[in-house]
Image (cartoon, rainbow, N blue to C red):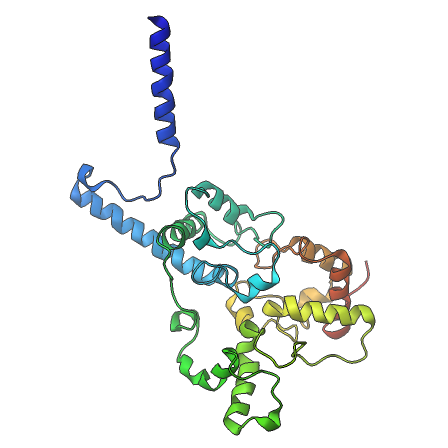
Length: 311
């Protein structure tokens, strides 16, 4: 009898523990068990948290993970491993606690940086709630890219550049083969759109930026690496004043005139590129770039933007 009771106790303990361990996918209560007034308050609080998370996501997270959470972004095409596609994973395979930890502490071996010093704890929790609800559970689209809320007032004023952004006109089409409207559109594209659309359709694949003359072999390698990786945030001229750079908080460093550059050393910049910069959107590149490639970028920056001291 004692053995039977012991068995029953262990059996029911295991069942209870498994129920408690389940990931609760929704904070929404079971309406039949909660006072309707209280249920409405809980639902409204949840909706407020989701919207708070949406604002945080659309400001900090979209440029790698995409507005729709599918990581189909220009930044993603540069990164290895790719940013997580939240639409391709269900919430039972990735717990809320794991996600909060990743946002707070970053993810070693990836470009996912820590946001502990950037976001408040409540904002970290809210953005995780939003991602789980919007992408992982509902597979929703969130928002479109070119909206007033995302900094694109009257997007139609860029209409002349649309054919280049959509790949309808190759970006390297000779100017003498473009009509005046197309020439204006190309100029507008190069000034306003290329920071996000810099893999536009071309007739001949290759660099679309103006090559710097008089570079050594190492500096030339650094130029290619910088323009294909770093210019996304720091701009092609190193100023960090392109649209993406202006959108990030804090802004990417101006590699030409930032006071920090006056005291910059090669060893310090190498460490920053490898490990990222806490409290900023600068990710760690140690698992993306080799030491040789990092040194090449530093040589290029030192040659073209701001002289960097040895040491």
